[in-house]
Image (cartoon, rainbow, N blue to C red; front, top):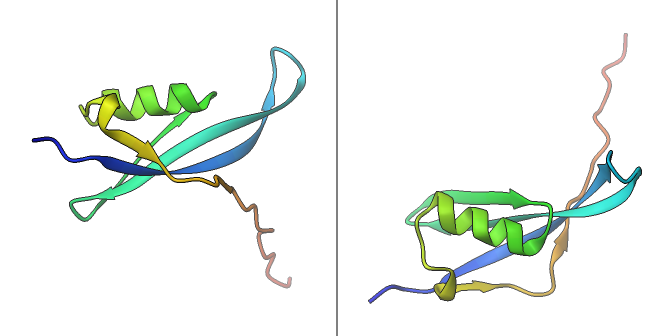
Length: 81
């Protein structure tokens, strides 16, 4: 029997060059058998489809954690010159 996989969902701010506007992309991730697994997508459905394809798992067995987390962008510390 296949076990359910629970994915964390992170929203990622992005720029859509085709539409010239901001967009929210998605990254799904989970720790499976001690390994970090992840997949990106322009939509949540794309990210789940990618995850299912990359890790050969049944999409029906995937659950997602809500609320989604927003990707935090931290400023890179510039060392003094």
